Image (cartoon, rainbow, N blue to C red; front, side):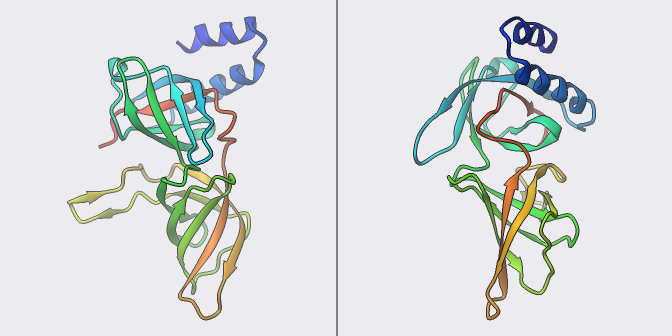
Length: 196
């Protein structure tokens, strides 16, 4: 699939898509999970959601809830609807998306919520912890006992902190996170199929 798609992108003059596929090839072998490659075939242009359609579905081994990553292993979203040969992926900048994130430097955690403006909002961060601009945010992969496991594997890159707001009287603070990749220009993705 990758080699044929790279040739197709070169033939049709889409070097950006070719670079993205090549980058995915490089990270595919570094992931501890089985993946299925997919291309974005449609974008939903709604004012209230951020969703893409991909050209892989249940016939390719996908299931609802599968995690989707892009170039560099950056978290893109999750499969939310499934057909035989296509799937709907809700992106992490969709307002319905919530991911428990961890700031790499301080190990502080918080809820990373999608926002239609493009910047992610990381809320409920302990106010006693120092949060610095430029720090990387990754998926925390937290589990709550044996019953509740994170829907996202630990350590997938979400983005970098670009701003922090703190109310001196509050017990929590809020950070604003720029996604690790441009979620509006996705071309090729990997779907993790064996994370339970």
